[in-house]
Length: 367
Ligand SMILES: Cc1ncc(C[n+]2csc(CCOP(=O)(O)OP(=O)(O)O)c2C)c(N)n1
Ligand SMILES: [Mg+2]
Image (cartoon, rainbow, N blue to C red):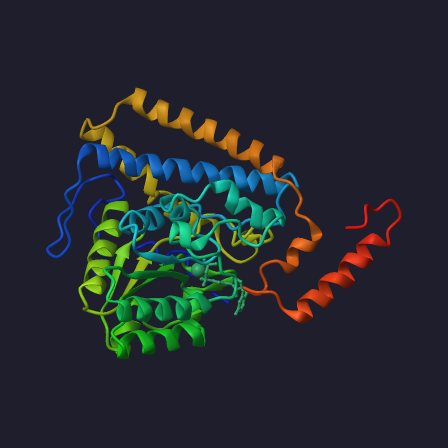
C-alpha cells in the first residue's frame, strides 16, 4: 500500500474559511460573522478548556482510572464553532467524541467521564441539556436526529436538530437512510460530519471517491465544506444551516474538514497505520494557535489574558480529576433501572435473580 503523506493537508479550494492557519481574518462572499472581542475571547476560552478536559481524561485513562477515552484533540474548533451556533431549543445528537459540544450544552465534564469509567451509562439527562446521550453504534444517531427533527416539524416548534458523525459513518446504511428521510420530509436537521480523515485505521479514500459534502446533492439537499479547524467559519456555516432548517428550508450537510490529532481511542496506536509527516503538517493548522495569533495580532488579548486562561484550564483539569476519582461505584442492581420507562415483569424477575446471586456471596449485605 502506498501512503499519501499529503493527505488532507492542502486546503481544497471549495472550503469555507474565515481565519487562516496564520491567524489572518479573511472574507467570504456567502459567510460572514460579526463577533465582539468578548465573544471571540469566549471562543478561545472554550477551545482551551475543552482541550484541557480532554488531556486530563487521556491521562486518567493511562493511569487506569478510565476504561477507554476517545480524544477530541484537533477537533475543538469544529465542535465549539458548531456547538456555540445552537440555541437552547435546538437538540444535539453526538457520537462518542463530542466533548466540546457537551461543554457548549453545559454538561458537567465529569459526567462524560462516568461513562468511560464504567460507573454509569451516560450520566446526564438529555432533555435537561438538549444533548442526547453518547452513541457508540456508528451512524445510528442520524436516524434518531431525523426522527426528532420530524417531531419538531410536527410541533411547529422554532428549533432544529443537529447530528454529529464521522467520515467513516458516511458509509453506514443508517446515515444514507437518514439523508433520504430528511430530504423527502424536508426535516429541520443539520448533518455535521467531522471529517477527521480517519475511521480508526481506515483512511478517507476508503470511504468515498468524491468529497463528502458533495454526497448531499445526490439526496437533494445542500452540502458545504468548512475549514473544521477554523472556529469562526464553523460557527458561521452552522448558524446559517440551523437558521435554514428552522425557517423550513430543510437539511444541510456540513463537512468540517479537520484532523484527528490523537489516536482513535486510547486503545489504538496510530503509528501502526499513518505517517508522522501527516501529523506534523496538520499541527501547523492548529485551531487554538490560529485564534491565539489572531487575538494577539489584533490586540484583543495580551499575555496576562492567555496566562489567566491557562491557569483556569489547569484548575479545571485538577477539579475534573478529583471529582472523577470520587465518583461512587454504582449499585449493581441499578443496571435494571432504566431499561424500560415502566416496570416490566421479565426485568423484575431478572432483577430478583441477580439480587439473590449477589446475596449469595459471603459477607454480602443481601441487597
Ligand atoms: C455499527 C458499528 N460498526 C463498527 C463499529 C466500530 N467502530 C467504532 S469507531 C469506528 C470508526 C468510526 O469512524 P468515523 O465515523 O470516521 O468517526 P471518528 O471515530 O473518526 O470520529 C468503528 C468502525 C461501531 N462502533 N459501530
Ligand atoms: Mg473519522
